[in-house]
Image 1 (cartoon, helix red, strand yellow):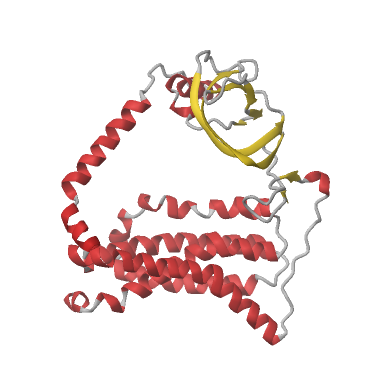
Image 2 (cartoon, rainbow, N blue to C red):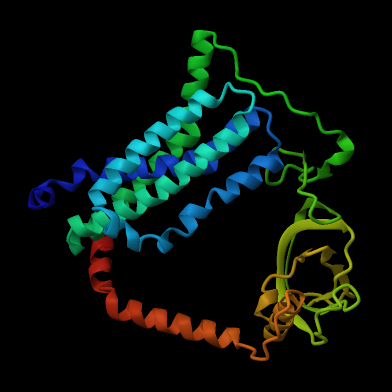
Length: 343
């Protein structure tokens, strides 16, 4: 291991973090381009690929087991081999008529392997370098990680298109059912955030949403319509804020909302369908009594007794932030960092 510590970090950090960024970028970004080209519904692949992010989100849960099972070096080597085999398998199954579920399964394997690789790579980085080198190479590793994202989103699709054009290979196609226009809902008719004027919704709520040019930013107060959610015993005023460019229409009748930035009358917000409900009110769960009442209603439906204790979320959040700032203040050498920035 001493030989490895003597080896220049330039020989392994750029390639290690470039390879770390490739699987994430392909699964989370390039896969959408692939599925769209193959004729898969945007709503369908957006839903499933968003679930594929889960291994990266929860990787701290199994990070303690990385060292228990084997060394960080072995994890890096074997996960890279597994990732290479998985990418080959994903390419081989694309011509199949049932490629969609199979490819999602392979991408799930890639996501889990990549998250494990990230844990081992970051741990090896911390072990192999002293504090000064860690601070110096933090920008280098981030740069090559970004290069990997650019490669996955730009270079790989361009290279694939060039090979297809130069070899005369026919594009891989997948026959799908054409969705009638009445099943689509307006999404972005003005082209504000994307080139898609209409997309198919998930159908969880009986609403249609359109992105508009005017952005609403305002603190709000709201009252719940108890007739729509009778299981929630909450009659106080809710507080939160709006920040969105969407306008929804349809079954909108869950909250009566007042924007504090103007003197206009109340507007109707929120929609409910079965166990699913949604609202434009950000920070709605910061309202302690409402949150407790909602959770108690769920507990009651599942045969559990209500909980009387109401946590003060604002106080807990402020205490946690204060504690975190104190840890940073005592643990981070700001003069050293300022010296790196100023040269």
